[in-house]
Length: 366
Image (cartoon, rainbow, N blue to C red; front, side, top):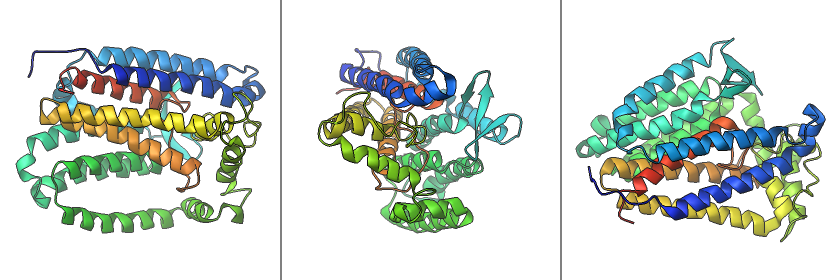
């Protein structure tokens, strides 16, 4: 391992902090009405998000100073712990049921979502596997299949909760990593057909997923049920226009758009800050993608390259799905917008991942 260590990527730090600041402002703006009604405290969600952000930043700066190859040694332990947590979350009394999904483990007044941490554990595991098995990666049986068995075992356990959104991000990130590692195109064509059949099976097996597909195609068929969220989201984005209604002036947060501080926070942002504000946020995410790719290309070893690539792919895929859902380009899934949406597990995970990326940047030739 190289001994020379430089300063971490300054642009990446500043972009992350900027997105975090925008997220804190928007969580307060989006949640104030709902928080006042439910908890008699307009700052209820904002204060908790500020606490999550503080913890996440401490984690980020701590991990930024932990040599990234440490995760190579701990990758197996991490993924075993995450598998154990995925089993525990399914046990009534341990796992907390919310909105029809048993995806959280309660810890006092807070809760932890194991599937979120499985994403980063899987990235670390695949980075180690792919960097050590490059000579087998063109072989489906010896190279691709073992990696996919691990990925889809984790996906299956996440679907038992069920949590299709998080599972999709994990699988998408893993596929990108395996593809970039040099796997053959024909393997992905075969997997694509299997994946399509599997997706159809998942949709058919759960009536609510069929409703999500039909509401995506025409949300006005069922405007008060399956199409409600996307219609209200579009009603938020539309009036925003070029410059928005003004910070704090959203109308849809007045009990029209359910829990607007979570998955649909981008709709409130677009309503209040307009096309300009929404575009600025997407440009900031593009900067993270750019810096992440540069770090991956300049990493001193294959493990660092795969680790950086996996992290930046996870963030990019999650942003694309969230914004796609909010703008009506994709069916509704429970995916948070990184750094902006309310939620402790998601925010802490993202800042932790950025911390790893920053450490790789200290050794990368960018």
